[in-house]
Image (cartoon, rainbow, N blue to C red; front, top):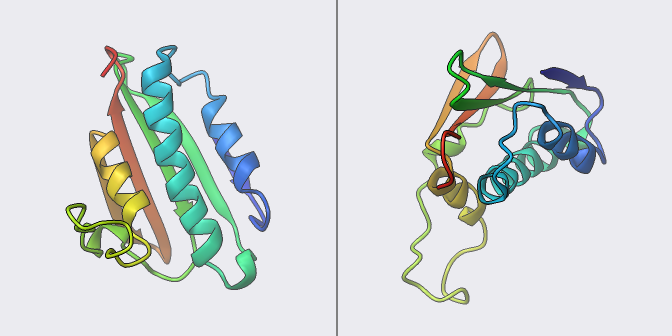
Length: 137
């Protein structure tokens, strides 16, 4: 299931709901929560930072592997090249007041999903997240 959103300005909620309404999503509410949080963090980052004034496009999609056990979520945009995985993980041993602002959402995404991969290809940022949905985790 894929969809192109153009422009993405003010469409974070619509993009998130599109992905979460995919027939590929698991029925398990615990898995849905983890997947939704990961989607919210990554979609918000693209909408806020990829394009000046959020004027640009994003193609999103979900796909199950042939076994129906591995969910893949893809976000693609032509905004500023940015590999979110290059950012260091926040020091979660520090108090919230001591930590610099930012980075916690992607850290959570990397913890909640089984794999998060970034590539820059043909002028586009492509972020792929996968989650094993064979059982509640």
